Length: 484
Ligand code: NAD
Image (cartoon, rainbow, N blue to C red):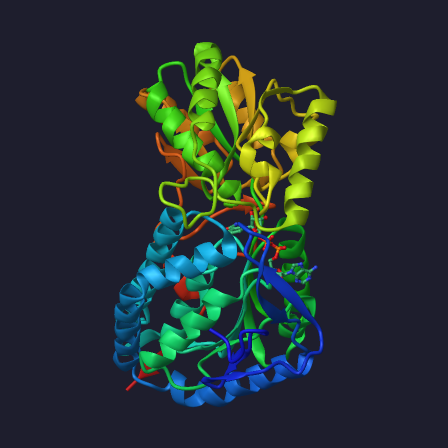
């Protein structure tokens, strides 16, 4: 985990290296508030050392035959499967989400490694033997160099796994800056990769905050940046990295709408929406934060959502049968409580008050499931990403109105429709402005072989994470026109 129980070390050149920084932050267990470790706020010199290690490792790694690289990914996949339970516990410990959610997250991370292990196929170029008489043309695919990754706290395993396995399988070397709020899983991922046979310096981890991020964005030796986090930082990272001549993909925040039509299977919709709104304490970029009840669907839907949410088990994510864990920090809990106050001031109807849940009295940073009805577009609780277990319900007359409402959000990550009508599905798919759509599914997160695709303020860049987009992002192409 770290070379000391006190302060997490960076992982550079295949070994733990203590940060030079004298500044660190406590990393509490969100379920108890007790400090687990300290995380260093690493310096530019620490980052410099990591980029140097990655640059030194690049020539040999980029020229390692692709099937040989892939074999290390296969071994890595085996080790991750063997350590599944340990990794899930680490995620729960530092993030707070329930063990079941963490277990699923580890699966999503492993799937990224499995996709990346297909590198021999993914890295193939293409050829046309006759572009003119006696002349052929071909495309060859190569890695781009040192890639920097900057990750959020909400998926300490899955989100970094969107980045480094594929980048590395494509022949790049990598410097990861995990969230300073969840530093532990990343170090374990690095250890296991080395155990799988990854050469030293190919994958490096530098802990910290703004200084490390800015160092990556400005570093001449870093060729591309993958970022996942909140909208303002995504925009900043996109602009800054681009100014410094880098490729950048920056995935930002979200406000996902679930539209429920009167013909929907209501029990299914309620089950899926409850999971999507309150699972992982609402700290998912694919969380359902707004339900749009169409026509007569409203009253029964709200009653059923309330009943189901009231029955959710809240507590330490390690506990048997716990569904809802804490939010990440006390400050985030305070911010969430501020939004509940704000919703009341704005005139929304508080159907279920998460402040009253016994666990919300502490210790730990718990907020119970919260539901607001009668939410309107002028309310901040509708406009902002709250990123907590706070669900807003709006009511409209038609599917067209529902889509128009959702399309007014400045975010466009995911959107769901609950219906049994095929025509409605088509209308929704053709008119909704969001990148990841669910039909009778609450969390339509694509698997690793498809792109993770948001629009508007949910995404800055051109090529999304994962799938063929990921391969394009982490490679560059040479074209040859040849007459023999
Ligand atoms: P965050 O933006 O606070 O932090 C993300 C990363 O950026 C961290 O590594 C952090 O150290 C760094 N950072 C934060 N502020 C910075 C600054 N001012 N300058 C430079 N670096 C800075 O995000 P978070 O709270 O860790 O994660 C939650 C957010 O991530 C939510 O908005 C969520 O929607 C989003 N998210 C989006 C996706 C997606 O696929 N679109 C996936 C997961 C999370």
